[in-house]
Amino acid sequence: MSPQNAHCPVRILGDAAKYTLISLAILYALDWSVFEIRHMRGGGMGSLPVDQYLSTPLKGNKAEYDYLGTANENCSRSVFPQYAAARWNLPCWWLQRHNANWQ
Image (cartoon, rainbow, N blue to C red):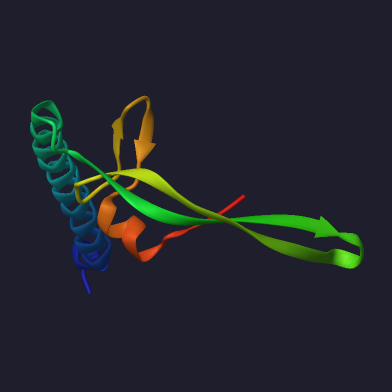
């Protein structure tokens, strides 16, 4: 085995990681562009109901869980989380599947 071929798997993994990161950066830039265009037109944000719970620690490493009700939470209509309205907003597809907020 020659010295050039000894580093071949490492080089292949490095190239794969590099191209994966470049692809993710391009995908995020496209998602951000589409979100900004929708947001300027008034359709980039959504709102979904989220169940809110409060966890109160008790003695003996126990906890009490209280249901606080439902509240609407803003979300972005995008693939990745986006920054709008002075905070990061989860994508609506994610928030729809993970609709419990623990405090």
